Image 1: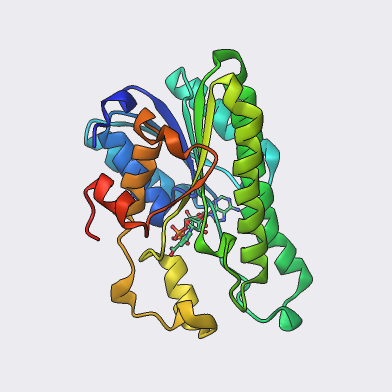
Image 2: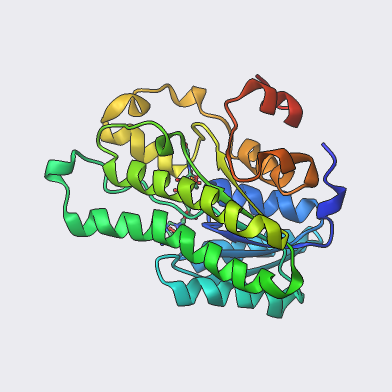
Length: 256
Ligand code: NAP
């Protein structure tokens, strides 16, 4: 996998305080990118940013709740201020709560999950498109899920929001491809993060019954995200790349 073209680019990663987002921040920095880490837990983002800096990389942490458009736009603006450029958005922030049958779910909590997982995705896309407009190029990757395409009980908010976000990937691809902007989704499979710990403890639906040893490490989707930002992945623009797909794993040099 040749990542040389990423060297020197500036990347905004939402949900970078832990899990897939944190692994992606470390990986992009190692590939020579400047990384802006955005999440609600600013302290955790700062710790990772300092770790990247002490290894010789460029990183900056900022507070951002993706369910508020102005905070997402401010994170994109901070990237330009800190690094003088903005090339890639990894739209990764997401929540699985509230897990539960819809009849038992508080509509306000359901709505809040959609604010983060669906509206937050659009907010990132909108802010990135605005910033990419003048430069006529840029890449957006929305972190998707198998739940975007397959219903799972107890996750109506998550399935609905991820399905909507996958449709954002497809529609924005139609709108923006002619303007030099690439957009893709990554469905990572099941990944060993805090989200899977919450899922396990819920006991609802087959994902919660999985053996934790079967989850892949967060470094795998991080590697996929980097590859997707290179021209080598251009054939997947407008689609959800499936990291479970053996052909994709082989292409990334990951175990099948
Ligand atoms: P995680 O460990 O729970 O991390 C989620 C990240 O999202 C955290 O950094 C969290 O930071 C951030 N976040 C949540 N709400 C936010 C908000 N309102 N504004 C900004 N940041 C917010 O989960 P993960 O597994 O790494 O999940 C990352 C993405 O992968 C999500 O989109 C998830 O749906 C997707 N995904 C995960 C799996 C899996 O098996 N783990 C499978 C398919 C898809 P703060 O709490 O500090 O804000």
